[in-house]
Amino acid sequence: MTAPARLSPGDTAPDFTLPTDSGDQLALADLRGRKVLLYAYPAAMTPGCTKQACDFRDSLASLQAAGYEVVGISPDKPEKLAKFRERDAITFPLISDTDRAVLAAYGAYGEKQSYGRTVTGVIRSTFVIDADGRIEQAFYNVRATGHVAKLRRDLGLD
Image (tube, rainbow, N blue to C red; front, side, top):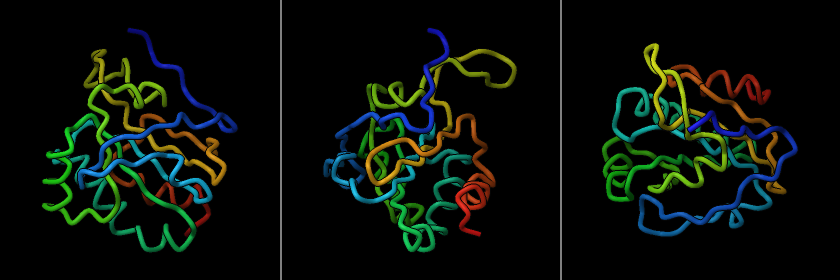
């Protein structure tokens, strides 16, 4: 597997309908008219992913006040996402992409460097999707710690 194709500003965001942590389905089309921060993370309930989810949770009110909906996506099953939501009081939807097809469509699944070796997995990424469903910004290989603060600065929210 080679490095995945990456999305660029102006690209149409790949559409999806996926199961959520609550057992419902969430479609990107349902969020049209609102800006979306879709962030891809490797695994629920791991230290880095927990830190990142809690940072988004703690910034959610101000992100929503600025017109953004936050959605997390990982290859975890909905049952694990529900445990993650409960354990850490996550207050935004977590969606399950067990076959990794949506992650791959966003360029957030494929070869990456991990501790000096090449592995295949989820590439921690965040996508800013505008109200019309286009990519405004795509951030790849983001750090779990401090990413939300940097994202807020990049979006002009601080």
